[in-house]
Amino acid sequence: MMNLQELPDQTLVEQFIAGDSKSFETLIERYRNRLFSYIFYTVKNRHKAEDIFQETCFKAISSMLDGKYSESGRFLPWVTRIAHNLIVDLFRQEKQLNICSTDNFAAPLLNSRQYSDKTIEDDLIRDQIYADVRNLINYLPDEQKEVILLRHYGDLSFKEISEYTGVSINTALGRMRYALINLRKLIKENDIQITA
Image 1: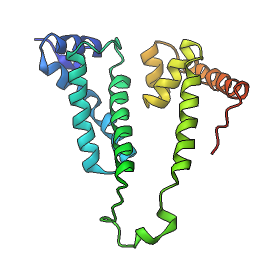
Image 2: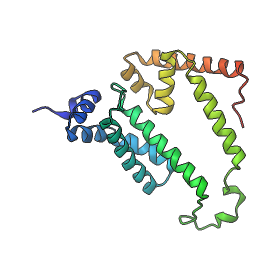
Image 3: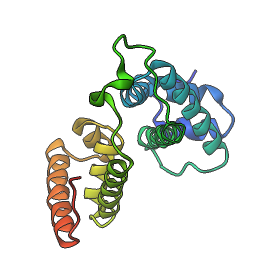
């Protein structure tokens, strides 16, 4: 009998698409802790994190069954990107609703400047900086772009990046170093302000 735990991610994805639901369960179990931790530490609320985790799984299933998975062995960064997009959607929705809850705090937070939200202008500037830097990443050589995305968007360690890309840890670190040097050059050449 085949042990699903020993199969690579890509094989499990292919088997799931072919109709084996256990393969998807194996994939999710393989990355459950890391994916949930990423969501929880971003939203800082267990109930919201659980909801986003479930929605991430649902979207991953739908995308794979619709033929929208083309990552070829990059399941964790792919599913983390889905979770990240859902988190961004949640934050946008909460900002539009202007939600502020003091349920977990004894202090009167609503009257404290220390805990108040930044202004819309601060948020717009920050979002523009992130968008500018994210666009500049696309101008990096593929190897450098890959290591930046895996490290900062996929939340992988350099050990995991080296295993994933098939290069040594030193090579992965070197690619990151050159990526950052090149990003600084691009930021300077394009006269982009990266501080609010």
